[in-house]
Image (cartoon, rainbow, N blue to C red):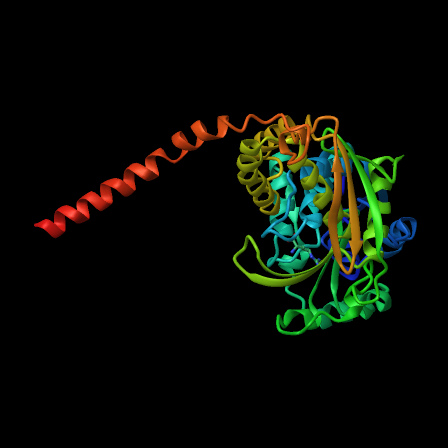
Length: 403
Ligand code: ARG
């Protein structure tokens, strides 16, 4: 029987060339396109192209709901932002894609799995670590890491083999996109001094031309469940939030980033839904979680973002962090009103049946229930050690002077 390989196929030039290259190595290629919600892409046409270019089978897997429930829900709970800014769209989707590749490899008896990542990025690490963890013994083939073709040689190879190139070569940028955001790099963006040109954006209006709107987001147990009072399944909710926030210019991120492999790179992200929903979620946490939990949780949030970025989704550490995060979200139920304007998402109101905020404790007006006399004893104890230290210091100084 001929050897078989499952290839993560996007329809772009790299993975199209990879189909032909793998076939030349004697493989039967099964192209797998995992739909994690990239807009404006006709996935049937992608599958057709895979077959035309030489795959023996082409599958499209709708993984949008799975992506939301299993990957984005914990990311929202973690307010997950790598380096404080990047909502991790690409990083969150890779382990899910890898899992589908492994499943298809099992079902079709493939000995190998292939992806189009180069040897310079994080994505190769995310794919390889996930595949090695989920399906030990699989042969992993990353043609772009092995063949050493320049862009020009790749195009020549494609033309020679009748692989369509036009549409893919036109874009000067390398783009990866899913429901949670778009990642854009390459071309003029490689000069970190150059301002990103308007063409690198597709989901957001320039904040200068943006409209302003208000968005009411409802959460149940840390999960966004409704927009403007209308309940929506998560994939639809995220798409709608992206629309609203994108029109207001929210979610443009220009990041000089540290890759796991040690390279610094400049990437532009567009993540209107992620930026708006995380802002709303965090605001609701401020209302519903006690101070000590909020403070402690920030360290877990950072650890979670790091682990996801570094391709350790299928690690026991990530599972443990997710369990912690899940435990914290029970009370995160309620509504946040966001003002979306001039590229910013700002909370202007929050309410919850589980608020820790208590107006009768906070008020300066009638109805105050706070026992003011209790403050005095608290302050005595709270300041005790600083006072004692200051006293000891001044005594030591006085003794030194006297001596
Ligand atoms: N730097 C981002 C990450 O490591 C995105 C990588 C893919 N970007 C791209 N433009 N193809 O998660």
